[in-house]
Image (cartoon, rainbow, N blue to C red; front, top):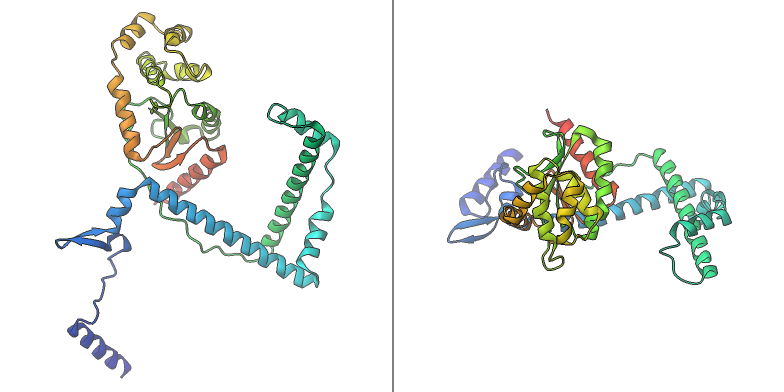
Length: 343
């Protein structure tokens, strides 16, 4: 009887136009956000147009939420264990963290001081007190994390917070110089400026990544000299393309970073040092053969959302700046896991 009443109500509402049933196949992405003369502008169109900036905001929001969820989980785990022992949370932390961390030794302070002396400023006695406090806090944080992990292992913790959808920019790399396996499952496209200090800084990270992942990773170079900041960099990029003609792009690439920022007058010197045919190099470089190709890379990067260097796209997923190794490892591991889960 109730089913019959429900069907009758739904029929009346449909006939009077009180509501519209939305087919299940209509997703949020195809939901219209506006219309122009009856033509819809969908959420999918807007998100595609915003591209990388929207992705960055979504990831920042997700990171903030994830950090807060983690903090709340830790609070609940600590409160539960403290209640089980019949003590306060602070007493629990004193017993399991503070009391189990040794004091920082003079040898540890000295090692840290000597390793970082070039960057340290100030009176030595004051600095050493600051180092002591810094190292002590590091020890406490490490012990607290170890204790929290032990509590998590004894509890059933479920994380339901979902990361935002992965946005992948389409980056054209046809004919660009690369390292690694040609058909590697993970392609890292790097937009860089040979005079950019942060680009130079991140080069060692890629050596580690290629060593760690072997033929699972392909590293592709694209040019993005920033004329406003480094007006002489563009010539270095053109010279590197001439080196690529002779199969020595990467050795010339490394030479440029080794001596960055490079004076254009020295580009031929470096060509000689890496063993290039100087006559062919001069002819290529002096003709301006690759000016348009370098500009095309810049336009490709701008279209993909690059606003500074270095900028990287891991299977289309953007990472900006000279990020630590762990940032690249996290995305690469996720890409490999996604590939492994495909039928």
